[in-house]
Image (cartoon, rainbow, N blue to C red; front, side, top):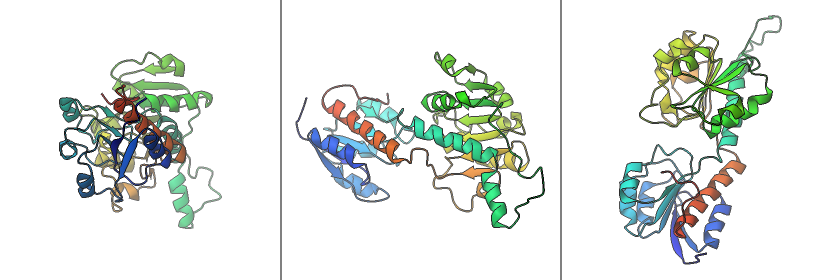
Length: 324
């Protein structure tokens, strides 16, 4: 086991201490950026000469950072599952190992996704608003009628770790059926009693449709007016992936014209979402500020995985979770 001293740039001062302690125990000198939000100027000032970069925020990670670091740079990891902010072709061209932290995020995001399914389907936001406006109605049987998960068709766009964690949780919820759309069928879908379907079938059949797929050129604005036109008027749309998978003006139209019943979003475009965004005016749209991984347990697990990516690379081993 190598104990040779090496320098690691930590791009954010709030990286959990267990990860920093682990790096230091393996010989790392940690150079910690102090700005919140992270300042690119500070990063560019501190990164020259480091052996590794621990990227703990979502600003672009590209040639400018790699050039500033210098030719001695041996590896980089993000403390995130998604890496759409990383110039992966640039990393491949330079043959610099790149790690990230998928997998460990699945449980906290799955819990939050089910929370969005319920809160959007059962009018949590609209109900609270009615109380605040003194419009709580006690004598109407059909007031605030919502959608149940029980006996519903649950659809997933993407069926990786997060979707499978949601599907696992739903096994005891007496759902009618679990369906999913991916480019190719998943070998383990039988474990979740899930059925691979076309994108059109996913839209037409889902009572709850959960988006948990990477943002790529192929998936960008996949959920647009044409897609919402095919969905059930009673359907609940949930996005815990990236805001860019959704055309938000088209979603606003679908929610205001009754094409779909409700939406629950943990991700938007842009982030932060401006306070005057039209989606925020809708009673049938639950919007959270990208809180999927915001638990101490998951964040600490992510931080340790990122640290181990660096340790492995510095010891000449494959990263625990390489990005390519």
